[in-house]
Image (cartoon, rainbow, N blue to C red):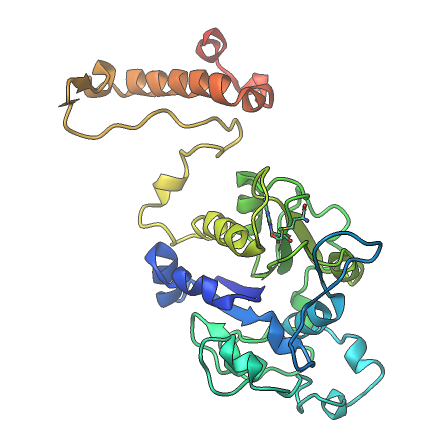
Length: 332
Ligand code: SAM
């Protein structure tokens, strides 16, 4: 696969829709592999609880670091606290020979895709195909491919923003994080593996991303917009679609991602689009688009893009590199 994607959520079924459309096709074609995991598979208590009250008081619940820690250690192939100094993690209480916990109640089954064996690997909502058992030091559910600790981008944590992503990137959607943009999507489309952690409730314990950054993992937190959703699942779907459509071979026509809004050095909103017929309900396609003169068509579209961007997103106009503008642009 060009890209392996793991998603951790308390609602892994949410990602069944990723089987549809172009992303579904990309999985069938072996371009991307997506596995959705149930966070509760890494709990040990009867209630499979993943949250607790906020330290310092306040409303709501916060996602616990221990459960996320066990889950992410396994997916990243890292040895966490559970394995401290133990040469044979399989012997740790409650873990099976490859370091994963044994099921402790039937509850986890109901929360997964209906599988009968409540084991993390088995209960993965594996959107591709995966039955590869995974050893400590390797990453899970990669359909035969093994990702070792080496695959984790080293030393890439401090200023991860703006660097080209490679290796493994761990991503947490978070409304109080920097905005996810087309630039981030482009950067992340170069990664080999993405692991998304979906928050719920009031969010996740802040030490979770901090810990993995300190381990040298490339950790990103992104907001998809200035509003609050109930959970990270929709935000992950948004980011995933924006990233994967940039993978080579994903789109039928690769040209279609070259000239788009927010894309390229001087990113503008795209010009308006029309198709046939030339006249519809007394509304006509602009004449110039029917002229067959490509130079004129390009100029018309460029002017429209500049004009629309300055009206709708003046911040994008301010960010333009003036050196890159031609004299006609300047007039617009
Ligand atoms: N207490 C948080 C705040 O006020 O910033 C909101 C938590 S929200 C209800 C629960 C989870 O939904 C977050 O941890 C995050 O994963 C996800 N989420 C909500 N809105 C989001 C957004 N705009 N962008 C990315 N993720 C979002």
